[in-house]
Structures are given as structure tokens and as C-alpha cells.
Image 1 (cartoon, rainbow, N blue to C red):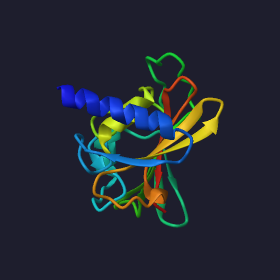
Image 2 (image 1 turned 90 degrees about the vertical axis):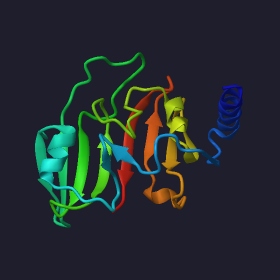
Image 3 (image 1 turned 180 degrees about the vertical axis):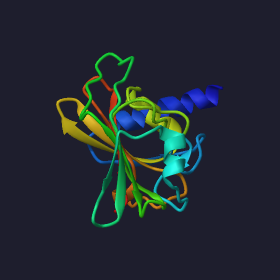
Image 4 (image 1 turned 45 degrees about the horizontal axis):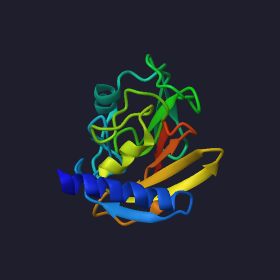
Amino acid sequence: MRQILLTVCAMMLLVIQSHGQGHSTEISAPYGSEFTINGLIIGGPAEYGEEDLIAAFGQPDNVLYDYSGVYTYVYNRDMTEKPGGYVPVMNHSEIAVFNRHGPIVGVYIVDDGFVINGHIEVGDPISKVYDLGGKFKTHDYGDGDGGILWCPPGRSDDWIVCPEFTYNENGIIDSISFWSF
């Protein structure tokens, strides 16, 4: 237990020192080595159809089709219990699938009900991201806002295809995004 506490304190110090510098760090992965939302693997290789998405996320409010073959499932939800300091970035979340049945190629999450690796939701403190293990890269967007890119353990740290957790000046996650196309 003492070793875990020392490791967590060391990581927090490293994160504080690297905040805003675009620094990358790596730690172990207690929540798995895949990026999942409500149990579905994001970014492939797993492929899902509409029935899988509805089972995991509920009935979408709208489904949009893009000429490139991407279907975007739009969810207009309202958080029932907003944490202090939470201000939504936009009014809907999106899950994008290629060719109606394929890998989830994009997500933009701005409300609760979408649980990342069984551990994190929009509205949680940004510090929970480090619980996922793997590699991290921080960004300072000014006025206390920022983002943390997360590269799951064992993956290449090609940051362009890693999910980003953005947070507000209160340190609360206000969006989670991932685009692989």
C-alpha cells in the first residue's frame, strides 16, 4: 500500500511539473490496454453494428450519414447530476462507425452515461485519467482549461490517434474525443 501511495504521489508531481509542456509519461494499466466505452472497443479491430451500439449506449436521437461511409449516432442527453464547475462544451455526444457495421472510428462525448474503461465519465476529476495507466501527454489551453492525450499501454504513442480528455478550470472533464479517420 505504501508503494502504491508513493507511486501515485510521484506521478502527481511529474504531472504537475509537466503540465502545459506537452510532456509524455507512462505508468502501469490497471483498467486494461484497450480504449473502451461502455464495454465496446474504440478504434478497432472490433467491429460493431447498430444493434451493438444501441445495446451499449441506448437509442440515438439521430443517425447521420457522411458521404465517406461514416454513420454518426447522435445522443442528446442532459446530465441529471452535474458536478460543481461542469459546463458542457456542446449539447450532444457522438459515436461514429464506418460502413454501418465496422469499427468505432470516432467519438465525441460531453455527458455522462459513457463510461471509459469502466472507470471514467465526463464530469469526473481529470486526475482519474492517470488511473488508466499507459502514456500521457498534457496540453494547456489557457485560462485553466487543458487536455490530456492518453495512449493505452503497449500502444504506439502516435498521439494523433489517441483519445483526449479535456477539462475546465475546475479540473473537471468536460469532453472525451477520439478520431481515427
